[in-house]
Length: 442
Image (tube, rainbow, N blue to C red; front, side, top):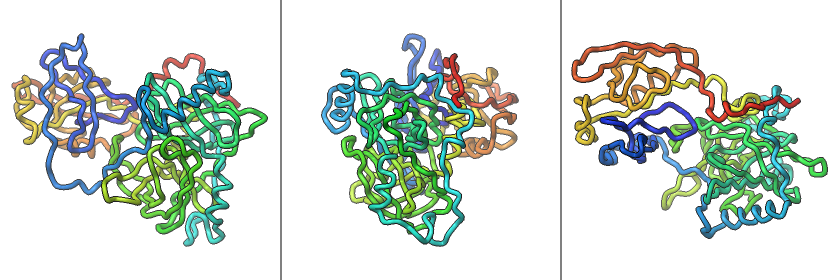
């Protein structure tokens, strides 16, 4: 099933005769959820079988966050319980007001390298030793513990400004109601406010309120485009949720690996530095001590080692600037249409629905175009015929907020073709509409 990028799971209209998803991951790697509405009376088909086909030539990986539920055991729970005890004892530094975390000039807060490309790599000819890099940047990498209800997650983050801004992965803090940050050279943990998140790039920015007595160490942004394959790098993070400040090293194995994660396909740096659960959001540094990537995933399979991935800092830099200034990434199109592909492998599960009489792409829900209804069959996108999720994705891939989207479709058994057009709005997270007291800081 296809749904355009957004941070929260989609609920589908499964009212009388409607159809939606079943909370499983389909053969294309898209994850979707089913949440019955109308008192739970909606009806859904049985689970379609998992597609068995040739191996997809894109790696499927796991995200490196450590999860813990309830009163379970493990490093994440113990680390989190320690922080909760400190907070209950009044030892945590309070979080800043969420309405005052944006800044109208993010570039002035962020330190970025201006180095030119060198055949020696992003660190240039005069690279430092691994131990020197560790000493330079270890205080810029933090431990993050996020909680939501009875579940907790442990990950890492990187201080990107001495004003208290921290870059991490969206999946580390997604849905959290309380976020605690432990800084290496500070006496007590900080409670953090969420500045903004972006599920499409798996990035998030947090903010803590630094104390004058405990100045923060901020990382310098490198230029990931200047990396060369084989260049040495250093990873620092919080593996297993209890080993904050752990340093490992490796090389850049590839600069632009296409990797399939729960968030879709991403273009990531590949490294053989040792990465484990809890490393997500941690820093990948060159031997000049510059931040060149944010660790977010690894390939996990028995017998496979040394396949870890990081978000290139060139990508992260543009995203974090938008998050700090606006709370979300500007210009992201919000098409708002969720579709399901009916094909040979799952047709026997969908034929029972009224109006689903052939293979093709069918509308599940449409947020921004009221003319489209559940079970309408999409035929063309801006004049391009589409019958599969992949074809639809390709047809909308280059569309931007403000562009016009024209669809032809059929409804019911008549086969009559209809056309509808609408201007694609910009995506704005729903949670920002509740920020009635947003102010810019200097």
